[in-house]
Image (cartoon, helix red, strand yellow):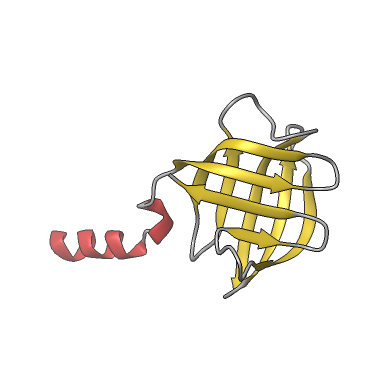
Length: 115
């Protein structure tokens, strides 16, 4: 019985719970400002992920974290979260064919390179 409960608990945990955040190199381009530098890559379910700045509290302006939520292979919704907790929707993005570490939207791009 204990083994069955343990197995059930292991299977019930999302796969992302086993993946740990790691340091990456981020290159983020927006109309507001570019960011190039270290970031914390936080894996989520599927191929979705979050990015957090390593130095300081913001990437630029009020943006303290970025979320790339994959809705289907090659397509994602991207948003930024401000220090005040306001979620700003950046829009849809497609995975770059030239650089698979990048997601490109109409007026932004988010790239996260694993070290």
